[in-house]
Amino acid sequence: MIKPITKAEFGVFWPTFADIIQARETYAFDPDMTLEQAYQLWCLSPQRAYAYMDEGEVLGTYYLRPNAMGPSRHISNCGYMVAPEARGKGVARKMCEHSQQIALELGYKAMQFNSVVSTNKVAINLWQTLGFEIIGTIPRAYEHGQLGYVDSYVMYKWLLS
Amino acid sequence: MIKPITKAEFGVFWPTFADIIQARETYAFDPDMTLEQAYQLWCLSPQRAYAYMDEGEVLGTYYLRPNAMGPSRHISNCGYMVAPEARGKGVARKMCEHSQQIALELGYKAMQFNSVVSTNKVAINLWQTLGFEIIGTIPRAYEHGQLGYVDSYVMYKWLLS
Image (cartoon, rainbow over all chains, first blue to last red; front, side):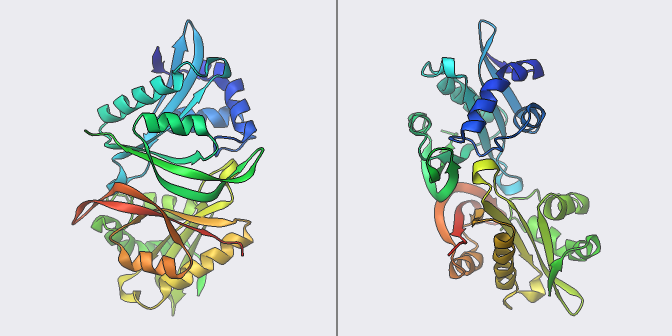
């Protein structure tokens, strides 16, 4: 169900990706990004990128990359997106669990989300359920499409038991 | 005294840069990085890179870049390095003040340091003196060359008055 994403699958998901970044509610990405730029950013530049498939449909995607280099290379970073019609069905949860397993297999010891928009309560609750903690609050970090400047959170989980 | 850095000036500073990353006490950079990789990372990839010059000597260098894109593009990020023989003389302070001015001129509203190693007390005190606050603590974020895993801090300053 979760497999390395192809360029064709990313292209199928692109309208959702574009809607998400244009809403300016969750991701600190340029909302005017093109498909090619998004593919580079989400699929090529990271270490891994996956698609969540169900009956041939791309319901979600995530990337995994090192969050820093050298003495902090044990910390991974991921981003997740879910298609609107698939929300509330555990797709993000399954992708996050999958990503933690992959991170451990790749030798990472921790996972960090650098900017979880504070108004994105569904995501924050889910990450907390999955063991992530809010370890910092960045004041006025995100210019929300509807609300203006809002805080964002740094969230973190030590993956090794 | 503070001017855009040339490749030749960065080359002159390189032995200090290499010593700093190999010590694994401050920067989350690959300690085995080459001069060319460091030049790309510090001088070409960022938006700006400067040298602090005194009587023809390169006493320090810093870069300035956007910390994120789109709805968070108002936050800048900088890194600073000072040559050992120039420490304790206000070089880092002057570079940080200069960088805040440049950031404002470029339209940024805030500045964020993503990982200030918690054992680097001199830097932490200086950034606090200059108005930065610790807004998060990342547990075991940095594998210190002498101390093993230590925490690092996220530090932040809203630049607009």
